[in-house]
Length: 94
Image 1: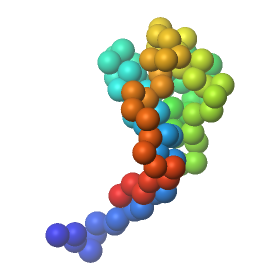
Image 2: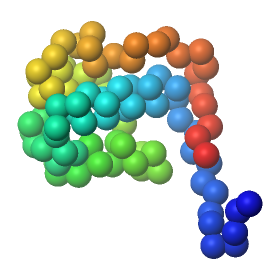
Image 3: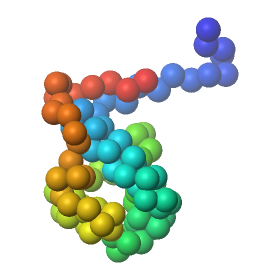
């Protein structure tokens, strides 16, 4: 049961964005990298990865970021892309 102190937040996001963010997070953790380290390896503003991985923020990966992520994580672009094809355009996260 939800107590009055708990707050439910609903976020609408593209399922492809969600799968991409989760895939990158998995690869980042597997490589033993912090959000800040990945951001710095990509030569982006500090806090970028943190904002992307916080679904309440508007920051998302762009096509440009895919190649930067692959380089920073020492993998291919294909490794960055989600393993599953999205079933839906948009999903709601709770």
